[in-house]
Image 1 (cartoon, rainbow, N blue to C red):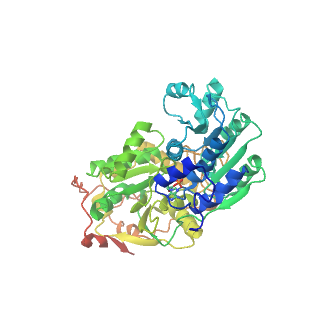
Image 2: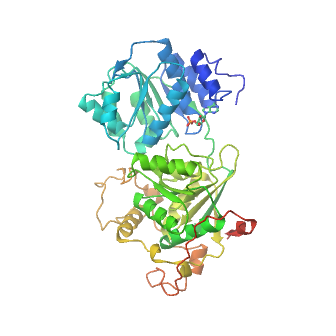
Length: 490
Ligand code: AMP
């Protein structure tokens, strides 16, 4: 960090300097040092920065400064600044930042997102408004109902634009753009500058300044990355075993599907762990409760889909688990970036079955390193299997669909549910796997492949003979030195 640059030297107004000081920030982060001057100049901006870099203050502070230095009487339902974000959580976080940095000003802000009753938002829009932070869908609902007037927007921010594209919001974004005045300042923040982001930026930004800060943590050496090979059917039991035996007390687990997240959280709870699932079908209240519990240590295991996890202000976790590998290798980097931040070490464990090996290789190519395969001490899948291990009918269909994605084939009974378009968003709003991550590789190399030979039915599924239901344990025991050998190098 360049310590010669201070918030005062960036020329920010005194009420903002005071708020920043009270927040305990001594110096601007690199993205702030680069972005704030550009935004204050009034030019458009294309910024590559991910959550955790301080990007929110990077656009919020100069926007607040602009509003202070260009006062106008705020009008009900007619914001001067629009911040578009992909998720409710991020929307809430950004607006909290606006309130925090604007606490010594009279700037008024509000959040707007779907999945909650629209009426309180309609009531709030009857009050004067400067900054609106919104997800695109609900914003368009309001625009259609004429409860919101976007003709006065002077500054547009697209926050986490890459994620908005991933989530299939491109059409909504284009519809929103049509409602904005042509003359405005545009700021686009994205974790990466992909080709798609460049195309979007070209359509929106005029002669933008470009700033870019290194990821605080890619697949860095701070994160110890390991993989356990196992069948899909054993994953729930195996993960429960690992968490209980290792005494992990704060672990974020990523699943591909909402249903999978629910099922895993239920299984872990049944085994005596405190676990909660968080995904798009959960109410805002349930998500907030789960997140708060996880942060304050009441919930040891938070199971989340990628989209739900995106925008959550949780990082520096000791442990991240990929219950399934993500279809998009970059998402692996996002996921493990939740751990090992700011100099602390973290650990990322992936449970991989044979159909995911191609994805694993694609991830290894991206991060330019091999993920260490390990075995789990004391884990005997054929003895551990319980009724809970078997996928139910719905899950079997989901697995078949997902595996259809991997092999570029049609796992859904031959039907494509994306209208034949390879780039159509999936059920969770995600794009299907790229054809490059295709082909099933049945070479089973992990411990599970070796150990599960006996006790298997012809279809590769474990038999129930000899299965010993596990005694549920109510406590996640603290890690002891003896247990550190649980996960062993293969
Ligand atoms: P963001 O990337 O905007 O989500 O910010 C990540 C975290 O960094 C937030 O918790 C902020 O409160 C914090 N933060 C932002 N700017 C600074 C700064 N200049 N110094 C220290 N912390 C900061």
